[in-house]
Length: 235
Image 1: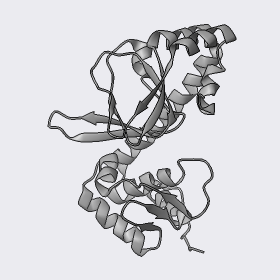
Image 2 (image 1 turned 120 degrees about the vertical axis):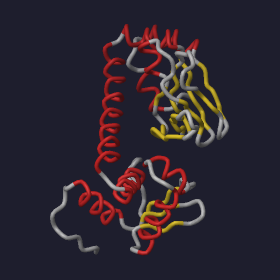
Image 3 (image 1 turned 30 degrees about the horizontal axis):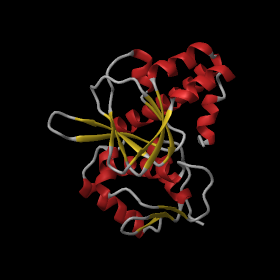
Image 4 (image 1 turned 120 degrees about the horizontal axis):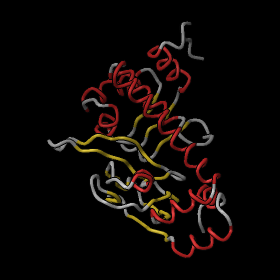
């Protein structure tokens, strides 16, 4: 059964196109750590995430790993190469066990060419990604490590549908992984995480991260980007 969020894309095309597409697309399963796409290679297949989470990475010549983004359920990758016919722009690996819907680039383009609704579906996702990248550029250019970490943690705290309080992420990213995401060193992240624990904003265990005071974290981010002017009093 195709996940509901992926049905939203399939529902944008005509019944006849959908039947053709469903006869050729396939479900792919991937274990944690598997490489799903490699930067610079030629492939135009498009993938929709049905279960699990993937990570988009870039590597420098020296081997430094740069985390671009995480892709969860309902996310898409491979669409850029399908659209422009160029090489893959980044490497994608499985952060967890994954179940993916794989669509050939040719079939994906046919959907877009046959249906304005599918074009709008894709455009909205690309706009969301542009907004996210704009935030990242600002953070990397204007904020210090502490503020960048606060921004990343707040995204994690608000990254899904409504969660019961207290919010717990498990498994949580390591300090090295967080440092990779925000362009910092592990030691700096460890120092700032310790401060947040001391201020009862988070509770960190070996592989879990619990958000105890999201409003305070929001206040820290607001102060860094110039949103809040009033002092914050934790309830």
